Amino acid sequence: MKQTALLHAAFAVLLVAGFLVSEQALRFGLFGLAGLCFVAGIVLARRGGDDPDPVGDA
Image 1 (cartoon, rainbow, N blue to C red):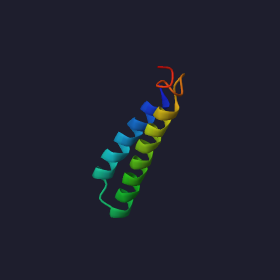
Image 2: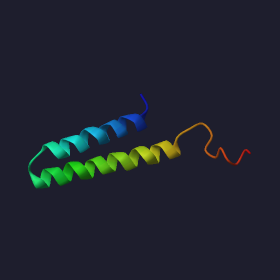
Image 3: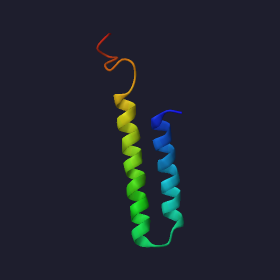
């Protein structure tokens, strides 16, 4: 499984966990970690691939 898929799956799990917990500090922590995983997944998706500049070949 790709790293981006794992990070986005972790985002979904942390987001749901954030809604399920009742303590406010823990909730904000889980939401923060979820956001970090989501952004990291996007960054890895943009950095990865065989061709770093697919538009440059056109």
